Length: 371
Length: 260
Image (cartoon, rainbow over all chains, first blue to last red; front, side, top):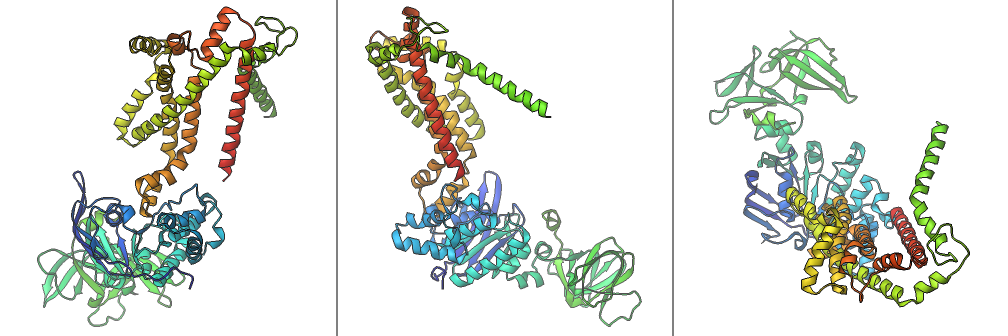
């Protein structure tokens, strides 16, 4: 195998960590445990604290309070150049006065690795990112995607137990981004290094991660696998940030232990009830909804919401509809191939079962922090 | 369209002639057969070049200027570069204030500085000493280094330093392997400016000179006022050639760097 040797990844333990800049609190009491060899993504909108967390791990900023252990040892006060962590930046940060080969050799020279050994490791790292033919080029002769692959090779060539990536694909176009996501996934699988990846792109997080930590306003809202976050969001913010969704609001009451909400005159039943006395909202995923013509046969136990098609988009793999409900809410619906077609202006019923719904406490900040 | 191009070309040529003419006039004058600074020259002789190279008045003043300018280039480059780091990396308001303060020697009329320096030097016994010249000229040269290096630092991407640190480089290593190579063009042009500032400085030099220590500009000035022989034209021609060579070399070096 061409890749650098498999190294044992480092565990990261963050306990009650806060970071303040003067009066501004960038991080409030976060707890995060990352397992050795795990691919952990820190996901959130800009200013949510995800990059601050990465900078704390990298040693670019100091923690204001709390504890941070890497590989079982406290790193408080340890400067970044002594932490032995690979870092990949959004802006590549290749040294413009050095060739690709020299860039990748740089961390090895600093570690006293010279001669044939260094050459061999540089070549192995460049092979891993498929850039071995470019060793004699300068960074400004490469495209963005090529530069980022070199940066990845440079961050991994010294076999660090931990690799941090700060929106590494943010400056690249969609096709290239998708291809590099798979490359990063493959390299992670081959190396066994712990990867911590920062992004604001929830799709990217779902593609790459073993687990995702969702950040909002300097706190972690939820940590879990992509499936857990999508199917069982703990907060409205997570529900809205991961995947598409429609949020239903209305007066609600508890009937036989279930929540019944009135949305634009239609009654919707969701299983269970919220603990405490927060007012509930209902989260509805677009692919859980089936569109039917009004008046078509009702299935027992089914929820129905009537509305009018406001937008119909053919996507090839299916169709996407925006349906305006009677209370003015725009509901997003994805219909699979073969489902009945509807045109703009058609009256339709949205049908779904109580089990398709997620009941969450309302949270106004979920609306304002999403941009 | 083509008319305006021709017109612009001719205009540029005119400006170039205007800028170059005084310099170019010196060249034929330096070969004047008569012992007078006259244009157009009469006859042809190398005698004034010979005089410059053999007459101790000229050779010692030239050596003095060279030694002082070299000391100034080194001192002003080190101090000016450090100052540029301070100014660039201080908070923006503090930095702006410091910068304004540090470039005052460029703005204050030379004669005002010269009077001040002369007054202090009389007490300190620095008149007519190499140390005195080096000190005064370093002060005058620092702003040029500051401006040149600061321009480099402003386009230097500090995130490269963060990246180098993450790869295992301590602060000194980061400076030596990343920062310094990338701002070197600014430092070199600052050093060149410092050298030239000292080498052709006349106002302060006239105040702090003594019969025992003259710099080349002082010697040229006294020669003009006393003998007015074409040796000054010969000196001017040699300096013109030397600076042209330095600038051409600099341009070639810049082009080579620009390509990589």
